[in-house]
View 1 (tube, rainbow, N blue to C red):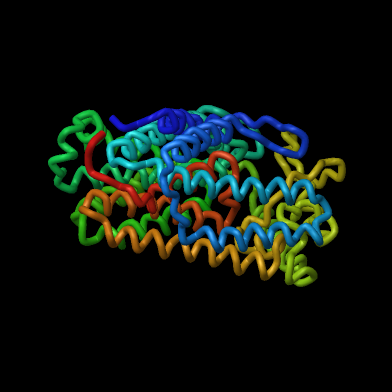
View 2 (view 1 turned 180 degrees about the horizontal axis):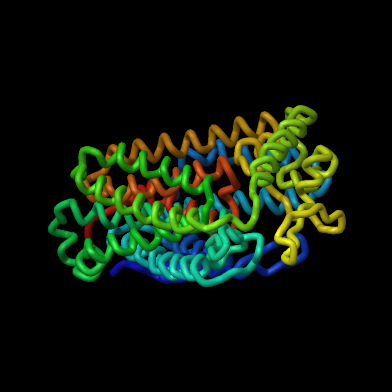
Length: 435
C-alpha cells in the first residue's frame, strides 16, 4: 500500500470535518480540521521537496492569483483590513488544500477509502439530524412544525448542515453507481475496498437515511443545489450506468424527502417564516447598493457585515433584530438584539459587493478554468470506473456551488468537502492498481 503519513493525516481530517472545533485567536478562526489539513499538506510538501518531485502549475492557479490580488486590492475600501487579510489567506489556503489533495490521491483504492471515511462521518451526523427532527424542540427558532425541529446536525444552523449533506450525497451515489460498472482486474485485488463498501442494499439504505436528513433541514437552497448536482451526475454517467439505476436512486431520494415533508406538513406551523424570504431579498438589494457605490474594488473582502448597518434599509434593520417570544409564540422587534448576519445568501452578489467587478471577473474565471480542466480530465478517464469517480466528485462540487447561490459555500464544514470533491475530480494521477 502506497499510503503515507500525509494520507493518513488526511484520512483523520475528513472524518473530523462535521465535528469541527473552532479556536478563535484574535481576528483569526482556526479549526481542528484546518490544523489537520495543514499538517497533511506540510507532510506532503516536504516529501515532494526531498524527492525533488516536479509540481505542475494547474490551470486554475493564474485566475486564483488574480482573485487573491482583487481581494488585496479591496483593502483600499475595507473598514476592517484584518478581516480582509484573514479571508484572503483563508481562500488561498483552501485552494492550496485542493492542489495538495489532487496530487496526493494517486490511487483509486486510496481515493475510495477516503470516500468511505467521509461517508462514515456523514452518516453519523445524518442520524443526529434525524434525531433532532423527531425528538428535539430547541432551539425554538429552528421549529418547522408543532413537534418537528429543523435538523442541524452538529452545525450552527440547518442551512449549513444542508450544504454539507448535498456535498457528501454524491460520494454515496458514486459508490452505488460504481457497483454497476464491471470491476477491473486491478480492482479485484482489493476486496476490502471493492467488495465490502459496494453492497447495494446497504448503499440504498444509507442513501435513504441521508436524503431524509437533507429533507429534514428544510433548507430550500440545499435542495436546489442537490438537484443541480444530480442532474450533472446523470448527464455525465448517462452512457455508463443503466437508466434503471438512476431511476431507483432518484426515486429513493424523492420518497425520503416526500415522507419528511409530508410528516411536517400535516402539523400546524409554529413559527411564521415569510420574513426570512423578505430578509434575503433585502440583503440582496443591500449588496447591490454596496456594489453600485464601489463597483471596481468593492467594500473589502469579508467586509459585507461591517458595512451592513450603513446600507441596510429600515425594513431590513427591523428584520435583523427580529426575536422570538416563547411565551406568546410570536416574533417581535428587539432593538437590543445584536445582529448576527454575515452573508448576502448569494455567492456572486457577496463577491461583487466585497471585491467589485475585478474580483467578480476573477472569481468567475477561476471556476471556469477549474471546470474546464475537470471536464477535460473526465473525458480522458482511463476506464468507466475512473469516469464515475470524477463525475461523482464534479456533482458534489456543483451541488455545493449551486446551493451557494442561496448561501455561502466557503464556511467551516462545507468548504473542506467542497475542496476535497474538487480535488478528486481533477487528480492527474488517478491509477487503477498498486495499493
